[in-house]
Length: 112
Length: 117
Figure: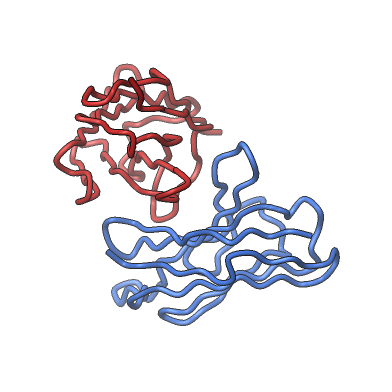
């Protein structure tokens, strides 16, 4: 299985500041046939299911604010939240869909 | 807007079979664009993909659970289901159904299943 490792485990950022969460995969997630990185990011608030924020490593899902952005290489990825708002408090997960089984990172808890 | 809703018993005895159903509304499971997945979440295991089924009936399961898992689809009811046999306390988790095409979206609200006698 591809192992996804996130850092840090928790993060406290002031309102209006920038938060960056990192995710490292144990192998490349770049699929050569489509030249896309098979990596997604999710946001999970208490009592709710995960919500898809970003796929193909940097494509925002419809309706996701543009303060959320994704980037990365073949194995090292990041999710950046610019201008942190109170509603962004949540646990964030990365997930690879390069190979079966799809696997998730352990999560990063973002606090104000 | 597609919505998914899990249903099934919240308590299952050890060694018995966990059975859940996911009802899809606002869309059809008879779509070649998506995979219909089960995912579970527990404090000890985090988010764990269980498996998926395609509209054709083809399935793919997590190797760690493959010997105990069956996912089926019912086009007439627009549902897909999960059976997990020989459960133990380690199978206690929130179980989600989700539509997949790479990333998973949307997800059902989840249902807590506790394995206990």
